Length: 255
Image (cartoon, rainbow, N blue to C red):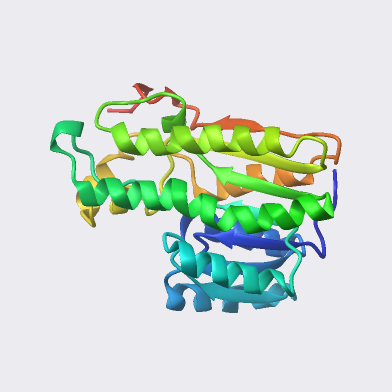
């Protein structure tokens, strides 16, 4: 397995959930970090927590849905930094309506974050990785990108796009040593359902009743494994679910 010590990682969605958990584990591996998110207070809290690992921590306040701002900010950043690892963790679900009752605002939020935001921040970093002939890109997909479920419609479509974009990145980077991985979790307890239910914590709790879901730390464990794989090994797709779940429809809840 490869050592990650001394590498430079940029993590989107770093203020919570999988992004935060991955940042913590990367810091423990000796990786220098650039934390990207919209919530300054959360980023500052995380930065303080990571200081004990004696790694360099930078913060970028950024809404990756803003194309011009993302391009200018990341392009300026890359003038002084080489990115070895890109963790595209920023993403969300918004709403659980059938498509005929869906909210345009929910649709835009998911498409702009999960697809367009991922592309906006990835493009300049991929250009740099290609020139350097090295790098790892981890895209956070979902079981929703593999199997569509009721009332998932647009969210499932965005994660299907992440799956396809990951495959496209791999194909377009053939001939280089840049590796691209699509990590697709099943049921995982983070802020995901709270956001999806527009802040309704009671509805969010019911999603995880009766079984042990995945945690953000479980996904971070897998990401570290993928990154530490030998240079000749590329884990392009990884589907990870709680043991009680076999697909979006089959989940054994204890009554």
